[in-house]
Length: 90
Image (tube, rainbow, N blue to C red; front, side, top):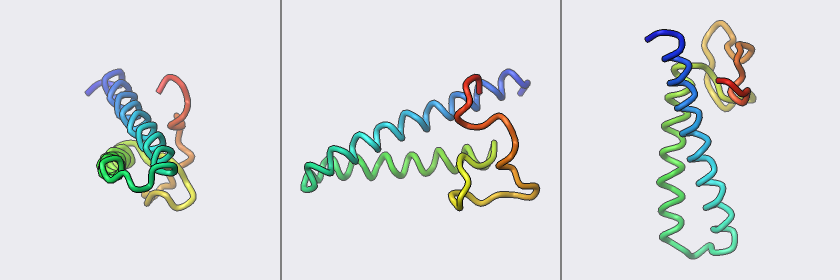
């Protein structure tokens, strides 16, 4: 895969992560006010598992999404590598 193709794949994976994170945040807020809604809880758990899988995939290919113990890092320390996950143009 060429550089442009790899860059596009990285962006697409980050976009998927962002979309699923939004869904989990939205469901989390809903569950704060509707804690007995089992359908919503099942949906929340489904998206949490999907999010964990996507983040694991991203970190294996491109390095950590966050520091502070959220991901195992390889040597050399990859957290300092650019581009940062939240920077535009990734």
